[in-house]
Amino acid sequence: MLLLFGKDISYLRGKDVILPYSHPQMEAEILKAEPASIIHLFPEPFKSLSPYINHSVLDAALRLSNNVEAPLSLEAWQQLLATETEVTQATKRYVLGSRPSTQVKLTRGLGRLTRAPAQKAPDFGFVVHCLSYDHLFKTPVLGKLLEQVPASWNPTIEKNIARLPGIVYGRARGIISKKTGRETTGIIYGLFATPKAMREEEPEQTYEKIERICFHAAEQGVKLMGLGAYTKIVGDAGATINRNSPIPVTTGNSLSASATLWALHDAVKKMRLLKFDPSTGLVNGTVTVIGATGSIGRVSAKLLSMVFNRIILVAPRIDRLADLKAEIEKLSPRTQVLITVDANEVAAQTDVLVTATSAFDQKIIDIERLKPGCVVCDCSRPLDFDLEDAMKRPDVLIIESGEVVLPGTKRQFTCDLGLPDDIVYACLGETAVLAMEGLYEPFTLGRDIEWNKVKQIYQLAVDHGVELAAIRGVSGFISDKEIELARAAALARRKSGA
Picture 1: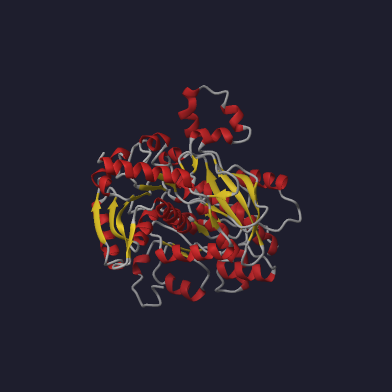
Picture 2: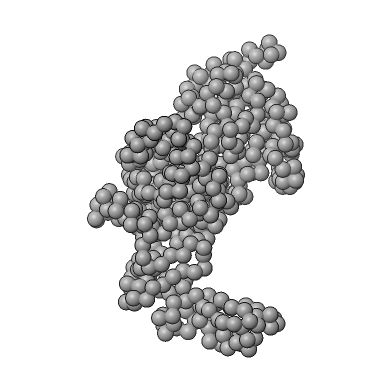
């Protein structure tokens, strides 16, 4: 590229120059700068095919000529090109040779036990992990072993077991699109790491485990990988994993945000405490978003600002809050925008509260300070509110972020996702919806979710027959009667002035 623009390349003297492919004219020009060496990343035995061919072109040509949909593994390249040369990818930290890793051998074996020979390749993959140490006890075999271990060993076990590679945890079948009538299937992968363990280890350790899963999935024919729970938060929120993966990766946060607002809309509507102002076209009330500068919090704040006439943004960094405030004021000029680093100081003003944090072992807000009748939507993982909080304030309605039900009359997940019946987390729902649509791309990555993508994935979900699951609280599903009781308690407390 520097040569094309006539730049001085004398600084290359004595340095190693790495090129993505073999280009004789370019190499001749670079040699004039007297580099220590020129290294091109394209496998040497394949240079005869074309002097300018690169990995992407060769991969596309091989896949088209052999009618293969998924990206080719290194072993597949060697087989198709009849070469015994070991091809090594040296452009990333985790070097992959032609010999399968222990993870690949393990998951191949598991796959053979559960997959019928004639079954079509899965459409998507999804990564889950233990949300707490207690979830480890649900793991087959491992759970039985842990029951024999003294509780004092738990912290050590939690830390060390997180180092294990991922496994094939289960399968998803029977997802039938209402739009196309076709079945979509998937592989569910599992990690033994809890959020606490992942937070304490370097992001690269989590990257490595998930990237190995992605390579295994590609070998099975999977076309898209979704990240669940804390795996979509670690590091740069999926960007690095997607860059190093042979198949596209999505965090699922667009549908997570959409389902959160979907559930929140239903809950606020059933509480019947807020009024729509026809003069402004907005709901007359205050919505507070804690964790507003995070991925889900940020996009939720933008979308909620289009609905409420007053919004309060809460996060630890005041500079980031100021930047977000300026963005929202341009997007929703009729909405008043306030910022603070202390959620408790605005709790009494809040009609609707959305929490989107990744806090551990700390209370982000004192529930006793919340306004009577406040509707709380907790989309944090781990959750910010528990049963004890709910019992303290029966006049406050606490719901979890929206989960969804995928279409199909005989849906089957062969593993425990921690949810009842056929309900799945919205991030898994996004991965399945993209697969149903045939949209195999990194739809949602990073911490800045595009609000128009939240609307797009919502419409795609509706088109394919995805439905919002019943509203859930900290102790299970919330009935309309329970919502009425919360409303009555709120009105009584407001009347008493408590």
